[in-house]
Length: 396
Ligand SMILES: [Zn+2]
Ligand SMILES: [Zn+2]
Image 1 (cartoon, helix red, strand yellow):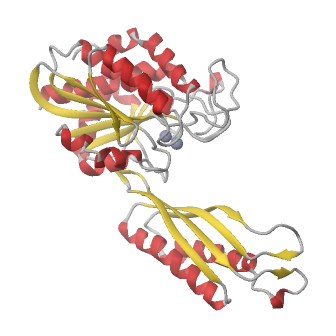
Image 2: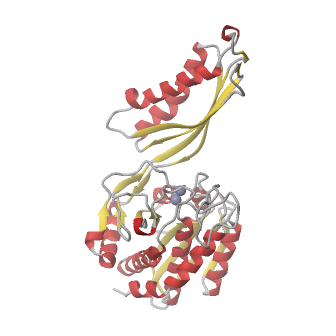
Image 3: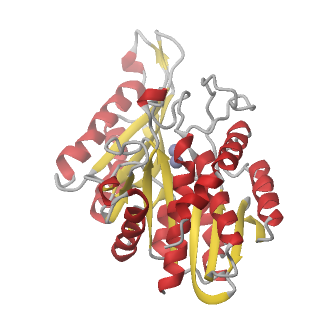
């Protein structure tokens, strides 16, 4: 096996520099043009064929080996979050209200590292590596946009691999690799609902239709979908994360609006949670003379890893970090990931790379204003993905 460990360690200072640049210049959703330009310039400087504007603002680097062979993709998401950073290190976000609080700045740097190392060895490379830098992972489905734009079809991608750095799986210590055979992350579905009543004086409720009381009943009833209608053997979550209505203590408002997320793995759970949510809302509103609206937003499918590819990846990872540091996760997570769209199209795997470090105070969860990850794992992310591409193209 080529010594990808040393090769990746040799570019660690650059990886840190790139990661910090991404961290200082966060873009939210599809608005990642600045990062996309930075990535494209780097790829071109290494003579890598580069596509821009894929799925609106995605970038693709195509490293063609000198010898024919299979095509494998490496996927990194590059978007940040609409969040005000509270970290105090010297590379904090330069843009108020925007922050890389999920580690995608690390993913972008790692994927650049993979592209650089593979390009250096392209004369020996058999086959092609397609390095995908996608926008809008955090809730808008940038992966689906890039697939619709032909990123997999155009390059005949046969397998895909990607990962997530950070603290997503508590059982993973710094530098440990977490894998999962089959379902790993939940399907997610956003929704918005309104209960529309009739406002009036807080002292004369009988002359109103009170959407606050009705909403309370709806939210409680929704929780019963999970406990009474969903099989206890199927995981499911229905969370109302935002509720808004009213102005002051003695006015019954016209309406209450809510936003939430539904999470599940199994199609049966989708039927119970997604379809029945509106039926329950409609039924309760009708019973109390209110009207309702219900709208489903972005939905991600469950993320399902291919068994054979995951076993292959686990073998590659074990050679790099030792078998004892490659852990099969005990449980999948109810978090969502739009890598799921790619894995629905081609076999592959998604893995977690442990990057929390209590000794350095790196303990805050993802999406927290003080989130950080230990940069010492950047080279390891590069080594894992580069070795995976290399071995896959050699053996197939
Ligand atoms: Zn996130
Ligand atoms: Zn993320």
